[in-house]
Image 1 (cartoon, rainbow, N blue to C red):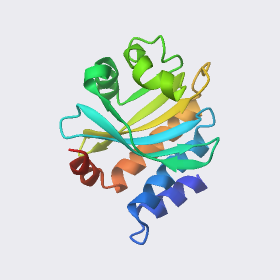
Image 2: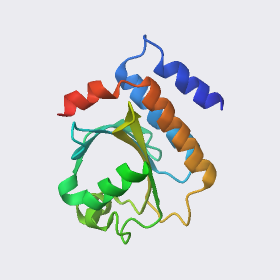
Image 3: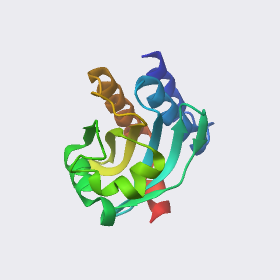
Length: 170
């Protein structure tokens, strides 16, 4: 819980840059979801037809990055499921009906086998995704990982300025 308090302080600190806040979100999620190798924060465009990665943390390298776009044209089942359920926990993305169409274009090149995603909201509208991915097939995402990621996503939704990023990505 100390980490979540520190995240709250960071998100409400006007002295921290947006990049520092983004890095704090993905780093905190990485600490709370041990089975994840990479944690990323994605922002949806106005009509949620695509998402853009605005922050990514790789636990193995310790590196932060951003970039990448996933569109509904190649991921319609994923978008529909994610935005209607607010979260997805998929142990085998390469064979799951919601994600199998994203294998060649996203999961295989990145080396991912499993994901745990939570939607970020602004005024109850989906505006982004906090995504944990594993380079091994996770036998089952643990309940404590799901609960922690949900708390971090909700906290980030409350304090983070998603509409600013949403306007930036079109």
